[in-house]
Image (cartoon, rainbow, N blue to C red):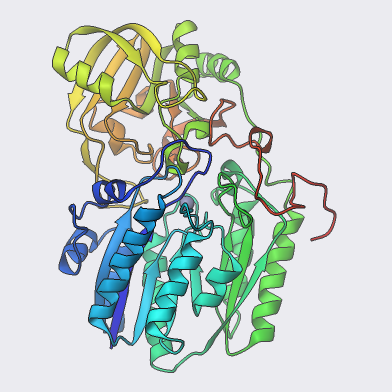
Length: 496
Ligand SMILES: [Zn+2]
């Protein structure tokens, strides 16, 4: 049994001014300029806490031959250029045609990619793959919990399996599930019927977190339904609200074995439960001044201020300075801000050397929506190559690279700077720079939720930041033009 797998993953923030190109995918994928195929993908991912790692393990468990074709991902950013999308899809289809015939195809996609010519880029991707393999070859797709799932995605494949966790700590499990289910379909053991429901609802990252209520209870409810005889899988996608497209927001999928009515009942039960929770899913934000006061008085350990507004994991610049400036002005002692994207200042620090004092101009360089650069004298404490291995439950064992890094000290605040834009989601990202976060008072994390998987247990208190930015969890911040209406909470809706 031969299963082809692969995909192109991007979470597109349509409010970002930074377009995404093939060069970004080539740089971020770790598979070289030509996005290497086959064994190179297996070598990079085997044994890691990723979708690809899970698919490799699933294929070994199910005794099937896996043919990894393409694994391209780029850091979340602006719209993927038309030419780049066509090239990546073309590359995937060309590699797929070369290995035909196959018994099944597993795609690992994100579900919130927007290309210049396709608001629903994954819908276009899946439909193109379906056209090449024909209607009879089983096609299973994995998606992120932040997928903006469309009718076209649902109709172009047999089964969609979304992540059940945010922080995304079940990627390996979901990849494994996809291959094992696909193998059962190929053997004729199951006949999946998938039902799709889209809610008139958009939600913001802080409360989509499955470590918090109400999501924790909601997912327990979903898992109970998944255990019913005849139900194969169910997916809750909370959606990615930083994309101005018609289909942004919450959707549900349920898949049963040959029983459409059961799939419908299951999907409706989940959709109804989410609708009941709509007000609990709206976040509460805390001002910088308030958190500085709180952290000063807090004697119980680390306070984390989740600067989700500037989360690079959702396409924000990651060089916002609002919280940093406030901490310096308040003469806060024992603060850390990280990881902030500023290749120029990193370069300057490396040239000056460890122990030097430089005239720095930190952050605020990408646009004018995240605070101005902070101009100050800064002490160069630590320099590093930015290479690390993920130690936390998310992407465990997978190598990461920030490019060169530097830790600058201004007053009582350490600023962790990187040459590559990437989300702070693993304590190792600080530790390689000589910072033990548990021994600091206040950490401003450039992350909305993912930091909670590994850094959360080190914190005594966590607050969601009230800062400006293109990932700010506040609907008043966005002027949606294409989003379907009416949609809650932008419009009053009493019943779905
Ligand atoms: Zn996500």
